[in-house]
Image (cartoon, rainbow, N blue to C red; front, top):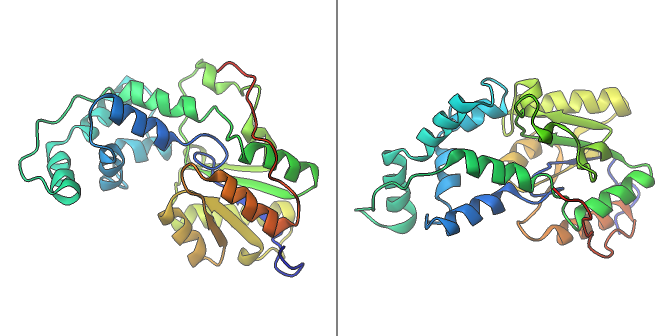
Length: 255
């Protein structure tokens, strides 16, 4: 159990892969289903940081429409990235042709996962909220097309747990850029007190780059490993002194 002095004042959470089922799982499922080498899609997205279609969408710079899906598809099917991935990751110098990738199906599979609460973290968040803990979220997001049903909160709305929710697509910044963390700390201080220090905040995220920036600002960090959110809940128990690991949440919602 953490000492009183080391207990945080605000708990800050990423959403995908931490509070809801990871979009990375949807990517992996798509790769396996279509015979694409696992890891390629994430590799291509990261390689185009910060100017790929995905990153622009997450900063709210382009609309979520057919043009975006064409741009995203073109990014994922770039022959140079396909060849580089095979050379660096698979040690293959003469790769097969670039596969066709249905960027729209992939995207909505990812967003569908983001509607499913994580079975270990979601009940822990509800308990933390009931005990009065300061809960904030910092998430790279996208804006859904007008009229899409995903604009409406689901019956198990993770977003509603948080008193403060910083959405990249709505503020024009995205992780891991330093500006969105500074902006989030500013909002945290406005909500919970100007005396809040960076080290009073603990940030849970599943991507190392995102945690590295947070740590550089003095924010404490916890890496959430894909498929091991139960371990992250145990760390929350250590930080808060609460019993948070119970039976996994069973969703009753039809998504």
